[in-house]
Length: 111
Image (cartoon, helix red, strand yellow):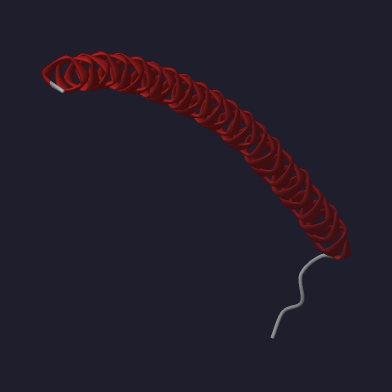
């Protein structure tokens, strides 16, 4: 069995060390690139999340405003109906009083 020349081992060990270093550098580049992409994706998702929250808040505020407007409209409508009913009651009572007074007057005249 023949052993390689001693310089072979030196070249082999340098080559192995160099290859190992290149693999480590390549691995670090890939890891850094992946981390950077993941950070960008996370940032994008956070921005999207905040935009959705803002949109939902605006929609909720709009819905509350609509409810308040509807409530105010219904209250005003009910107040109007109550006032109308009061006026109708007052007019009816006045007519009944006039009819009552006329009936009393007629009755007194008949006697």
